[in-house]
Length: 135
View 1 (cartoon, rainbow, N blue to C red):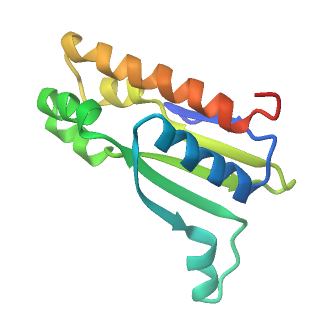
View 2 (cartoon, helix red, strand yellow):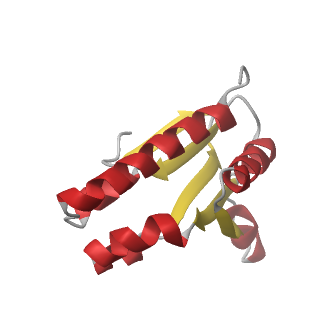
């Protein structure tokens, strides 16, 4: 299932380890992890079943502010989020919205497209480290 702007990588680790690795890499990269949401626990609290699914919300003002100065509506998509989830086969995935796609969605100017492109590159590299068992 392809979703425009969504990047998904299969992880070589389980959900908890992938989430922990992601949190550590985000913090090591100078990003703040603002929240971690356990959707499966939320579902269980109301008697519903959901495969393991967690969201990390992260970012920093140095990267996000120039984008919001260019198009304040991008604030609906910032801070950035990453979804760590388990599919029907038991495989773990890491998914996130590509910051360059978010910038395009909000009509970001040429001047700040570089910021979004840099964010995309950093997130792509970080996600590969997090999900790769050979890294």
